[in-house]
Image (cartoon, rainbow over the protein chains, first blue to last red):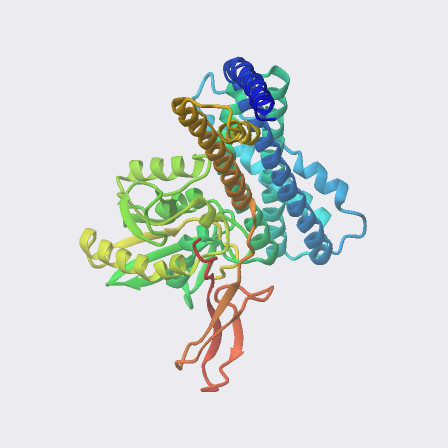
Length: 377
Length: 109
């Protein structure tokens, strides 16, 4: 029995030994073929899965925002017909930038285009929601814009995803996969913004108008230019003219035109312009930190900043900026407590700036820049 | 990669390999394969977490212009900063206004 068993073991051992060598060789060939031949393809497939997953999430955000828009329009606007098709038309709207081959006068052209776009958007929203008052129309306009932004993000990402798939271009796919987490974060912020606009809650970007409204509270107010309110107050024996977009509807107004008008009304009297705005912080910085600098603190396309810079240069008026740091997400979602609390710190900074850089009796313009949604005056 | 890892583990424990160097090589490959699987899975989870939307609680701060009355209530549609809410229930003379609207924000993960 024993010799036979030994013989069988030898046979099995040699067979398995050979199998081990063969499989080892096969695996080495497979390994080389898989990782050197198809490695990139495998990686691309994995990236495509990631993008596909992100795209589905973006689609969900887009649909949520659209549903919220429809629901809010129906609740507030009391439309007599189905607002769905009209909202779909608004979601696909676009703006063609003017030709910049000859850049002279392009700011005026862009300003005109933006005015037309703004007016048309407002009219369209008013038509879709006839039951909404002017403040609600502003909020609905902002809500439709947030939905439009989400729709546009989705369309762009889908375009590059399909392009990458179609052309099998790893470079398109890699770039898209690398940027997707940031894009999803931004889209998530837009969804938060849509919810804030639907309910008329102040957003982080509203810190400028909030500061201005604290300065102009209980003072005589008047309207200057498009959707901008102005009030005069005294601070450290200086005459302060505070301005902000008219609230509480979602609105940014045209502070450039308003500052120009005030300077022209007070020729040789204005000694400085202080602009208060929210500014994007760097990663690692705390939200609600206050910083000051020089120049016109105002975002957007640049037309309003151009007007302020031009007017300030013409009259040799220094422009100072006081900013409240916050992330892009915080700027368009409901205002955080630390940002709201920064308002008092901003007023203190304005006071010290006034004391340091002006004389008693001077006239100073304080402009609260940003979206005034949920902030009255 | 999980299949690769399992295959090499099978080779190591199959009793076929006698050379200790080959055993070490196979164990290393198996560990690398499982690490790759683990990292891929955790990366997928992080991706899902980024996209999850968390609704926030918004609060309105109501203050009296005359006395120290202060109340923090849940935001209601129609609330806005400096909205007048009538006379103060504490001093009966001052006007109640919404002094601020804010969110505490979701806790950091």
